Length: 251
Image 1 (tube, one colour):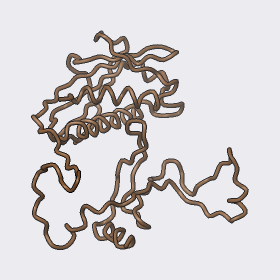
Image 2: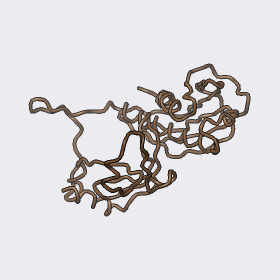
Image 3: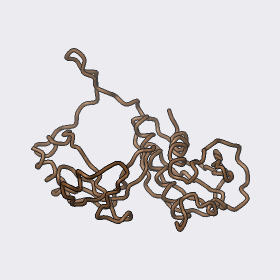
Image 4: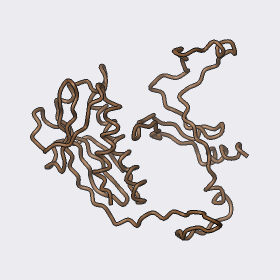
């Protein structure tokens, strides 16, 4: 079974070059003592993977401005490492069929000996990343997949008892859209659009992003990167009643 630490390294190798200036490489190396102190963050995992997963950065990495000028580098690194931890949890869940989520994430001071070590290598230098894995993995049965073939289906786990009402709709597939902003435009403005033109939206870059189903906003949150793709970290959700209205408008 794939370990969480392997999923984390794979996620970091995909996310860091896209999120950090200079597209640095992520390489494995032998653990060593960093020269600039340690900047540490820990994720608490729950589910079929439980425990703490700590990432310790060489403190001098804050001087590199990997995450842009005028940015709080420590906070930005915390956000990036949280996204990586959540991406690794999603990857572990999808590949094993088990359950894994990031229950909590926080900055820590110091840290124990490293389980693995990585090197962040860029044209302007190299930095060390130490990983301390205190997680434990429960045994997970392989996921069962049903498959229709000539009127038959592979055996699958029994379906739970279906209650009358909303449970009948839980398997309905819906299209969900992320909306970053809007703008009213005249037909002539649309016809005049060309490659390279910039269309300004009605929102600031720091404003929340809408998750829209049908014509209803069902949640809002922050845009994040997950394995090189856009994702949404939900910060607020509509009431269940409002969310159900988004289904009604599609039929």
